[in-house]
Length: 337
Image (cartoon, rainbow, N blue to C red; front, side, top):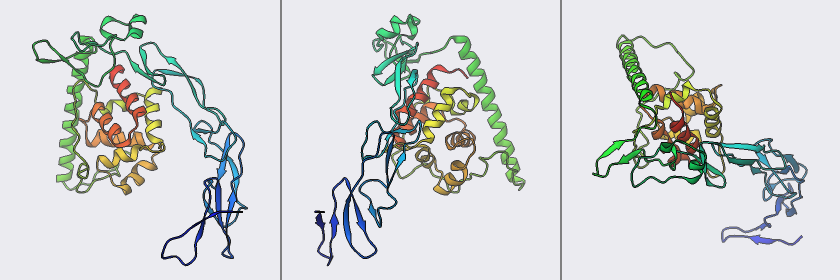
């Protein structure tokens, strides 16, 4: 079978350079052979991957894609494709299986289409020149103050140039939220004083949860990268996620747990916040509740004032995962504490 030679000036002998749809088989006798990859049926892909270097072709086989995660919709030699994800506020019409990608429907009530595969929540209007009313939000008979396009900017500008915070919830809810925030701050302060007292007494703390095993020595906040600036205005505390067990919140954990090709996941966020690889492996990876929930539990304990908006900024910067960031933003906009 013909093939090209791949050499450099320091090599006496050359290895063959096989085509993209071939294996390079290096036998025990030293022979180098290019072997055509076989075609696998739909719902499966080659193992080892086409283009690999092998000692024998005996172990080449077609393996099924992973149900609900990857698929192959036509016979071929390529790896299984990653299933697409429905946007928050978008119903799944047909689930992803071995041979077909996931099919998503229109946006739910209270959401509008940004693109054909992304929904955003109908959001609060600021009653200023920057408001953009969305036709589909108006058509859904959303309240007049909830018909505007979603934006990360939570500040409303008055005509005189002064800034005011625009409330997205009725005043009674704001009062309750402020009360809860004050109580939470007092509780955190009392806890910090107690822990400081225990340390001064020289009494080691007994483990209270599976996250207490994670400790930081000489922690720095991601000094190797540019410092991120955050806007904390009108955003829930990150620890509020732990108080909800809804499908939307579980979806946030599941997606951040899952690494996608070319993108990061919970590990990138953990590294940004100062955890090292050993701490991630021992404290997050093996956690029964999932590594992303464990990471948020640790952040809630170590950085109780961290907001969802700050967390979104890090997720978007460090992982390039807009799907996770969108879920978090929708939670921040729509859920009450």
